[in-house]
Structures are given as C-alpha cells and as structure tokens.
Image (cartoon, rainbow, N blue to C red; front, side, top):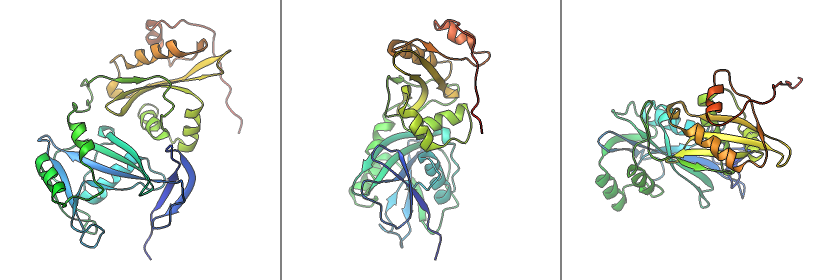
Length: 303
C-alpha cells in the first residue's frame, strides 16, 4: 500500500487544531483541511492550464495546478510544492500573491488561491497527475469553462479580478495603494510567519504563533491581499504597553509603511508604549516622534 500524505486539521477560524489525518480518512465535523490552487500568468497575460490524468477524478479536464497542503506546510509552501511536482516549475515564494481565501463547507476545506507571474515552458510533467499543459488566453480560459472542459470546482473569477489590479511590486519597484488595518485580529499565523521569516528567519511554531497573535493588538499593511508589514502591541490596557516588533517585507521598505504603522499604533494604544530598537535603527524611531526613555534589560527563560 502506497504512502498516504498527512493533513493537518484547522478550525473554522483557520487555526490549527493540533489534529492530523491521513488522506482518505473522514474529516471530523467542524474541522477543515487546507487546499490550494495556483494560477500562473505570463507576460502576455496568458494562463497556464494543465490537463488531468484520465485515471483521476474529473478525467482529462483542464485546471490550474493545485492540491492539498500536507502536514508541516504553510499554504504558500504547499502551492510552490504542487507546481514543482506537477509541472516541474520552481517558483520564488516571495512572488506569490494570495488572491482569494474561503472556507468551503461542502468539501470541508480552507481554500486559498495563489497567483504567480511566470514566463517559460513547464516540464517535466508529473505523468501520474498531468498529461498535458498549455498557455491559453483569458478568452480561451473562459470558453473552456463555458464548454465544461474546466474542472468544475475551479472558479476563474478571483483570477480575473486580480488581473485588473497592477502586478505586485518586485524589489526596487513601487506598488499601488497600501491598505492599513488597525486592530487586525483576523491576522493568521500563516500570514504573519510568511512575513516574519523574510525579516527574522527562524523555525517558528505555527500553533504558538497563532496563540501569540490572539494576545496582541495587531496593525497590518496589505498590498492587494499580501501582508507587507505588521506592528504588534502587547498591553494590559492600563499600566503598560510595548511594541513586540515592527516588520516590513524587504521589497516594501523605505516606502513609509513602517512610519504609518507607528502612527496607527500611536493613535490606538491605550497606554504609553515602551520598546527597544535594533542598533542602527534609532534614527527611524526618533524621526517618527518617539522619545528615548529608560534603559532596557532582558531576562532569558531558564531551561
């Protein structure tokens, strides 16, 4: 009997429950597993479609690449892996843009749709999954859907809406208007860790991260659904508050995002805020109206 992949289970809010199941096992009521679809769009605004193997469900229908996120992966990591395995394409995770995220009760999954800009030809294809792949125009994609040749669970609408927006900025480029959110308690561990690992690489526990996010007041900056910056406040609401960290993706730095997040924190904090600054970053905080205060110390937890 072949190896069956393992799925992590989530609650309705997208937090990991700590439970896992094998593919094919029933999902308990009230639990969900995570699924991704990945649209690849080239410089001609053509979409890469792949054709399903005749022995799979929905045989020979066309689709964008996708699949189930396995235990230990984030949604983004699962998306990149699926494309690599099925199409032989190695994507840069930081180029991914999540364009839709929804909970589907009928399939008991948390469904994320990703968009990557990529030019080239796929290959080698995973022969057990994919029998063909081709670039198609947007009208051809919609025609495929109308004729019933597209996977019935695949909805092109999030892609069409995303393509109406400017492309997400690459390093050294500027993007569109940034959306700021104060008191963003819907921030997921997955989103936060995708940002944190770009600034402070490390092996972070998603469950503990989600628990930490629920205890802080979160201020976020999004660029077309992508988390570009985050500032968190930990406070007792009366005596004390601190900024736990201020993080901005490298390609979005020097665009005023950190300054705007600081101003949001200032406008919404119920207390004075005490925090430390990384060496060399003092000027940034002073420029934004922060004043030097008491000397800081730290106590490390005992083993």
